[in-house]
Amino acid sequence: MIVDLPDTTTSKVSKALVRIREEGGAVALGRVLTLVIRTSLGEEEDAIEAANEASREHPMRVIVVSTDDDDGVKTGRGARLDAQIRVGGDAGASEVVLLKAYGAAASDEESLVTGLLLPDAPVVVWWPGSAPDSPSTSSLGRIAQRRITDSSSRPNPNEALRTLSKNYAPGDTDFAWTRLTLWRAQLAAVLDQPPFEPVLAVKVSGASDSPSTLLLAAWLRHQLKVPVEYGISSRANGSSGIHGVTLSRASGLITLERSVPNVASLVQPNQPTHDLSLPRRSMRDCLAEELRRLDPDSLYGEVISQGVLELSD
Image 1: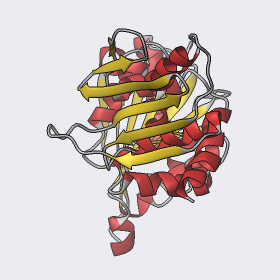
Image 2: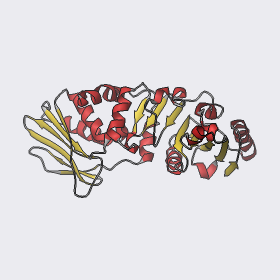
Image 3: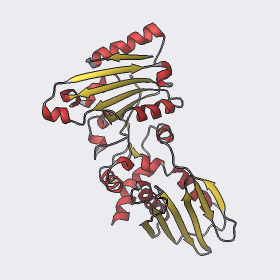
Image 4: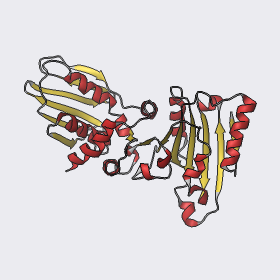
């Protein structure tokens, strides 16, 4: 069910939610968190679709704050708030409140969502596109336990990641880190096998616009305490993301390379080559993983605040 509320207020939206629950039997019981999505006008649907899919694992209330990127505030355009409520089949296992703020109505994002938050439930804020340089001190970030950004969506992803590293606060995370989960698992599994030799050096390569490559290099340097060569590699097919990792040990080289989309080849001394499934993770997969933990990710904190800066020195 979809209910449109043009030219409204957050108070009227809250009352409409109560009325819908009373009349239609849709209840908020079982909702485990409030997910606030901050996006630009016209870019809401992909994020809402990912949240709806993730809600089947994490039932939640989704509040989408969509603005005209402050153009209206700067020009003095009149304030206006249009809202839409989606429940039932149109909202997955969640209930979605879409707030489109124009002009001065977009100037105070915190006040737009405060009255719509689930009581006594954690708050997660997600910026699928452009995000503040310091998420924890932003208007929405101040009310959240977890703050999710995606540096790959920025014009200069690696520079955006370095900016986030300088402003890191516990509770911050980035999809560039979430996309590393499969890579980190495969590399850890390799090092858990004989001959258990120490790694002497590491080489990581990837696309120039891949912040995940930078984070992977920082993680390996931070964990292994060895020199890491971080470089940009080009491919004829223009593939994005991480291209490969080479670990040097006394017995030889271990290479995990993704030369074609979704499949990586693992080459180890005195062993046959193995092809492994290593797909680029979807927005839904990344969001669902990040919502599994509502406490700060201490390892990410160490890698982003220490490893990235060490690698940049």
